[in-house]
Every structure is written in structure tokens, then in C-alpha cells.
Image 1 (cartoon, rainbow, N blue to C red):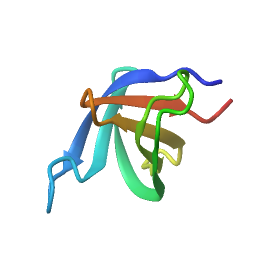
Image 2 (cartoon, rainbow, N blue to C red):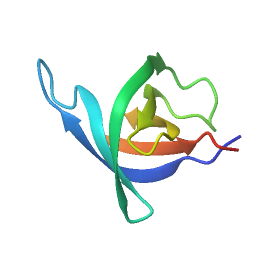
Image 3 (cartoon, rainbow, N blue to C red):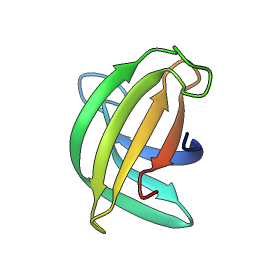
Image 4 (cartoon, helix red, strand yellow):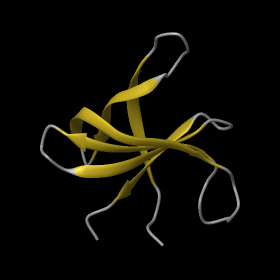
Length: 83
């Protein structure tokens, strides 16, 4: 299982606050999100995987990541999918 890495995320706020991520900061670098290719909600069925909104994103550096927004705690995490 991949580790969840805490990150800071800047979101677009439209019809609701934090509607979707626009940028995230990781490894002292700001990553611009160009595309959200998938978005889903996952419940806490396994203690290793937090419940929340999941986003599969592509950045301006042509990298792919999965971001998790744990709504209950209002915290963001990154899963690096390069493994």
C-alpha cells in the first residue's frame, strides 16, 4: 500500500468551498493541476485508506498523482503513483 503524504492544496471554490483542487505543494514545489481525469468518493472500509474525495490528476510537469481530501478532518494527502 502506498503511503499518504500530507500536502497543502489550493482549490477552486464555486458552488461549494473546495470544489476541486487547482494546485498542490509537495517537495517544496507548487504543482499546477491541468486535468482531473477521475474523481470518486471512497468510504473508510480499510484503516490504511482514508475516507474522502479522491482525485486522479495530471500536472503541468506531465506527472500523474492521486490526491485525497479527507473531508471530516479537512486535510489533503497525496499518493505518488509512480511506483
